[in-house]
Image (cartoon, rainbow, N blue to C red; front, side, top):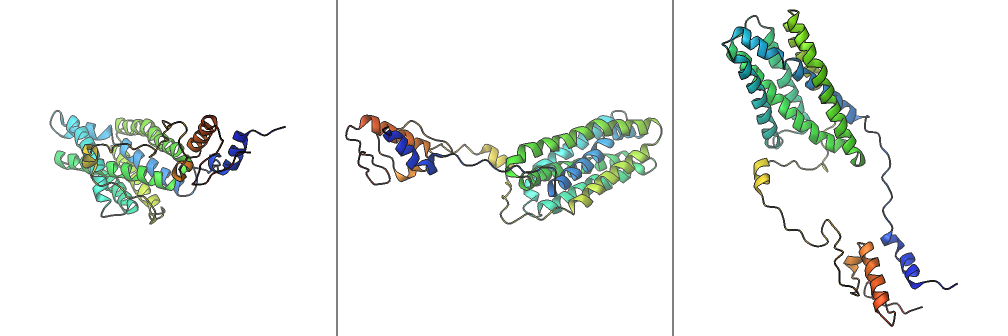
Length: 284
């Protein structure tokens, strides 16, 4: 039974055309990734425990409308922390910045243990806690992308959302319950312990390796930068090739495109000579 010339070509270039083997399955919840997710759950619980408590304390001890000012101070501090974290990463490693951010969440929580603290002090504590939370969120996402296996990053980010989502459901209710029963100080203690536990867990994380990606330090500048013009063959295959054209060594690296060119050349060339890699092959 005669063998088709196209089948011989596919066999000859099977190493180029064949797809790469699938990446091995790796566990996500293990090692440093699990420690990082536990740290996320701890500082998120600290943040959400006092989220409904601080506005009530401000409204009781301050002027009318101070509750809205407390919420605004918390979230403005969070936004500033998220925007400044890439710049801060140029001075400190992600691990040290995560420890500092979680301590900024924990220590100001003790302000709400004081009897009748002034309104300005409570607003300042809320802003500092928000700044620490924003910095910790950005660093945790960056570390999660670095520590998680490359074929499990999507799932690890899903676990990150699960850790923050569950704490945002449970701990605000805990804070409101403690405040309603006259134990607002206990809510402050829980918030302090949550941030402190997150800092202690961050101490167990490995230092960033030398091969780790360099974090961007200019978010606004990167947003204003125009996109780079796309070039054929860069980041995608260019299938708009000229039928019958020769297959160069660079095109053969793309495998499938080379196979298509060879087959087009077979159909259009009457003598069956196949130029590829600078060589010719006589017809069989």
